[in-house]
Structures are given as structure tokens and as C-alpha cells.
Image (cartoon, rainbow, N blue to C red; front, side):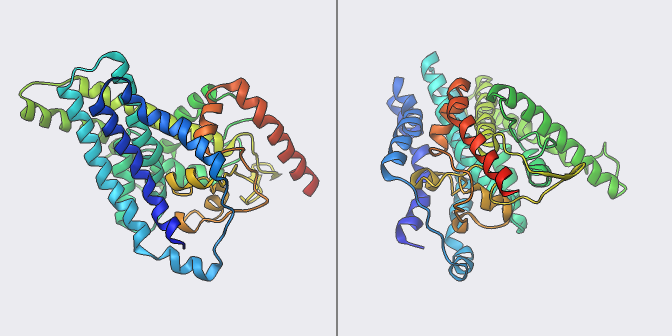
Length: 361
């Protein structure tokens, strides 16, 4: 892999740096990160263009084992824990006016959700116990730990079928999808975990139920921060709880925006009642825009991820036959937030995909 790509994945750390700079500059500078993500990155995506290059299989095997790429994700995990603690601390000792608070929380969530959940997603698919543990830690900081269960054992099984709450339906706007996916994914995780325990002959209502822990741990984490800050500051800072859970909601909303973008309207063929064709590179929207792929650890090469979930981010492939988004995720998120704009651009693309699939069959 080229030096540019090796360095490129470090660009993710630019985002939290801008949050910190914006906070200490104060005022409207708290929106610096928002402007960078939703204006500068889409513009640079357009100017820099796409990167359709794939490694050959022999080289990919070597690069996938390079510790450097895992180290970036490990460092991010520890960094995000410290970053959340810093955010809670500065909120506890600062008097922000409303526009500053909104800008800071939005920018903060672009770190914990936009990048942090992406890293959690990468680590959660791996076999090593410590990588899976790091995934859970990151998800704890955004109060979305059930994603670890539902994504791996639910979404990857049922993606592009009516059974998957994280697959957007054709004509369904993001806001309706958000409610269906958030509620449906949590319910799915509950059912998956209950089934796992029942197969082992273990009571569902017991300490062995991961969903009980996954629901409680973000609350315990926030409560611990509150107690620590009480001893540091000498007073209770209850606004920290509002900050923590608000940034969590925005963070997992970013995740759901990405889910919506990745799978909007795409459905696998039903071979027989309740049985669908295997997932292939045609079953996810993709984007090869070079810069946003650096920031998102190549999450935008999503078809290869679904075909090979355990494959590491640095060796994910581009497929020419995969349906392609007109831009990277930052620009697509803005489009998804405005349903008429989304439908105007994406429904024709979806219909083109449907014609291609129908013709192939």
C-alpha cells in the first residue's frame, strides 16, 4: 500500500482536533468541525475524485496482517474514551450559551459517531477478543451497545430483505426509517440474545444476558464520570448527563443515516418463501471518493464488507458492478436529511439498479 494511503487513514484524527480548537476559540468556532465535515470534505471529494484501485490478492493478504492498521484503531479507542471524558469535564466547568452548546455537541458527535462508531464497526467484526472488547467500549460511549449484537448477527444475516430494520425501503424517508431502525434494531438484539441464552439453557432474565449489561453500562459510565467530576470540581454537574446522552443520540443518528445511505431500497431476490439469494456486490450502495474513505476507514466500500465481513478495512475492494453513490457519505448525509432532494437523486439510481438486476435475471 502506498505511503499516501498509509498516512491517509490518520486523517480521522483531524476531526477531534477541530472540535478542541473550536471549543477553545469559542463562539461560532464551535461549528468549525461541522463546516469541515459537511462543506470542506464534500468539496475536496469532488475535486480529488475517486479511487477505484484494488490490491491483488497476494498483496492484500500481506497488508491485511500489518499491525500498523490495527494500531490506528486501537489508538482511536483509547483516544475516544479520553475525548469523552474531556468533553464532559469542559461542559461541567464552562458556561456556554445556547449556540455554543449546540455547535459543540454536534461537532462532538461527529467524532464519537461519525468516526468512533465506524471504528467500533470495524473492530466488532474481528475474531480477536481484545478487538471485540474495544468495539464494545466505543459503543458504550454513544449508548448504542446493542449494535454489537444486532449488526453482526442480525443485519449481516438479513440485509437487503424485509426482515432487516437497517435496510431502508424504497420511498421511505430517513425520519421514518430512523424510528423503524432504532426501535427495530434494539428489539432484534433482544431477540437474538434471548435465543442465544435459550439454546444454552440459561435464563434470559439473568446476569448472563448481554443486553441487560449493554443497556446499563452507558448509564453506569456516565454516572461514574459525574461522580469523578464531583470530586474534581467540588459540585455536581448534572448538565454533563444531558451532554453525554445528547451526543449519544446525535452519534447513533449518524450511524442510522449511514445505514440508510448504504442500503436504501436495495432488496435481494426471494428464491422461495422466506429464503433470499446470497449477498453479493450488487446489494449495497458504494462510494469510492478517496478523501471521505480515508476518514471513514473505507466503510464506503460497503459491498465487499458485506461479502467478506471479517476483511480488514485497508484491503476492502471496489466492485465496478456495485451501485455507486454520487458522492461520499458526508454529502449523502446532507441529501438524506432533506427527503425531496434524496428521492430526486436516488430514486432514479435505484430504478436503474432494479432494471439491471431484472435484466440480469
